[in-house]
Image (tube, rainbow, N blue to C red; front, side, top):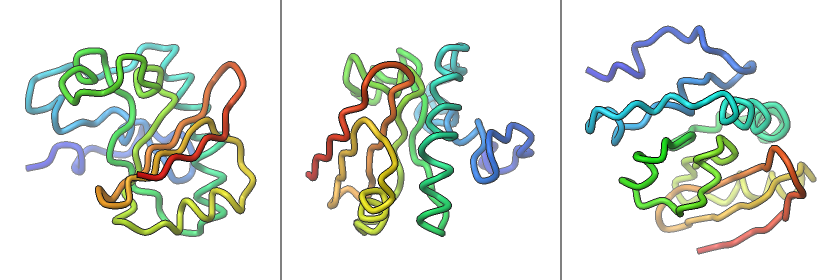
Length: 143
């Protein structure tokens, strides 16, 4: 039974997003890893939701399903994430796209600020990040 889906959604960050979505990881559960973000990463997650994901959700008009959010150091290592991954800071999220570029097109049209988008067309997801501090690059990479 999937504990993630059966937990009560009392950890709401915004109208459409909960902290659980950013913390849950199948790999972490399978390996007994604690993926609880420290306070600075929680700030990054809240910033990402408030300034990018919730406004993008409103513009897009459809749910934005998260497949990966915050990653502890050990979890990031196990999933072979970049050593300096923004997931470690709570500044990045991977979103299921199922190969569709509609969310990417809506992001471009919305003029919302972001740091980086990596659209993995064949893998069916999109990496999206927003820095808590510093200038965002508005970089788009399609793979």
